[in-house]
Image (cartoon, rainbow, N blue to C red; front, side, top):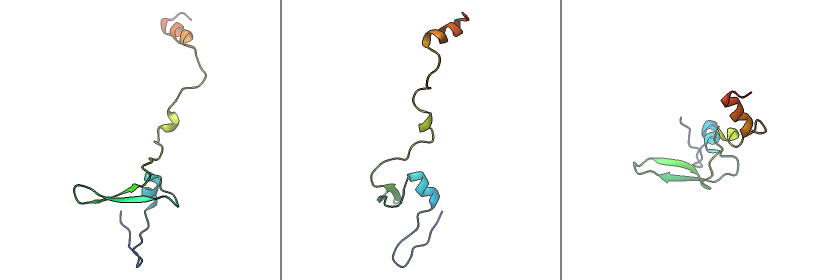
Length: 77
């Protein structure tokens, strides 16, 4: 992925990269030099965007009780 530098030294961060990093208007970013000499773009606040699996975390909601699950497992029902 590449972009062009303007006469003011500005670049547009591609949408796919902004989405990946959770960068929105007003977000602060850091440019860091990696040990291999490359430059890495990162969010300045170190917050990570929510995982695509985040909405699946937590409890399954109301459902069977432990006793009901055990009864089904044992074939008592």
